[in-house]
Image (cartoon, rainbow, N blue to C red):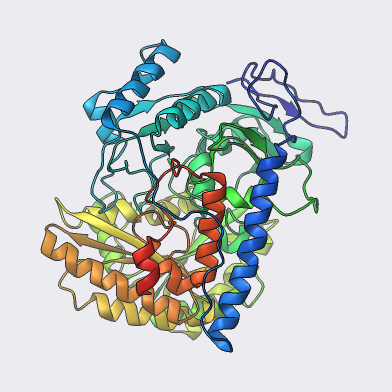
Length: 558
């Protein structure tokens, strides 16, 4: 892998050659390239107009809820349903893709390939095949694909690490193009002195951290969702992971800029590489959590942070309420907590049953803490505080890792939770869902949800990033009747969270599964603002249709 690393100070200089031919720095594909920060005036004007109009509409909508009669929506562009090409048009598009990309490995219509890109064993949503899968290597390739899709009115869905859980990469019912970003998997620059890194969207966060470690660079990227997740999907789904309690989520400042192919085929870069900027509003965040509906990310600059010493502690509790109350207290002590994870008694049984752990755990609601500090003494001090607080809330069996290997082994049991849960019911599939609430409401939410799940007659373990109010339920089903029961339980869980001033999803994203809850959570004005931005950037509705935005009938019923 070709890399460029810059380090300054104390006479240190590390350099690897830059990957050539992969960077894209212009705003349009033409023989004359201009700055990547030059964008078409019409695009900016249209987007600005939509945002201003949307904010006005949002303000009026909220005033209407409190003191004014209901107002008619402000006209902001046609909300009509997009019209896509015919099967004959799609066939022509596929033929043009094959003529454009002559390498037989780039364009695939293999039935197994197109289906596998629209299906996942990790969630419950029905699989929907794409018409064709294309494997680009550069930004220019993506632009060519987008222009062909536009010509034939063919939907486009970007595909990254395939770890999303709400159907984000499912095909569209009419068919469409799946853009698999796995060939755009190069790290382009490592700027050690600036603590940042530039890469393509198909690079995984695990690969980034492994590369940094192998090069002896004492930095890492802290956003840690599923191990096979890649940067493009992580940005698009607004993900986070176990480290969020210490380092925040992808909606923080970890993504400094992105290069994006818009639905028009235009290429933009959202900002420069400086650590901070107050030059206008943050267009990078426009694409974080947009789930590929506004643009296709082809390059990203991420911020890195120093690697600090850590260790792992584990403690058991009589019930989930006492465990989550202990977390709330620990977090307010100001000690060095990098992660704090809840595995309920069902999940602890699953870990034992899975057979990958080197120990047999008590089948009790359990907290896994990853402690962080600048030296061994600070880790010991933090462990002492955690132990004292845990025991105050009925915690018992406190274990502190004796060395790095034991810490890794303990944490491995937590990271295996998802697959441990799946193994509890052979032949089953999961509804793996998450919600998030203010930390003070978490004990009530988890306790009430666990009581609810215990009445279903289904296996339904709970795991959570409880340090920031986020938890997951994994409800196992083997037939349609059980799936219906599970869906009803998820609805109750979501409504419960929103009623506590929380969200229908803390990190899984919206996709197909959660879009019907957005009006309840955000309000009609905010959802309409999102749709106006979508219609402005993607007036043909080609980018990942059917995801994220509630359907009009769902708006009316909330």
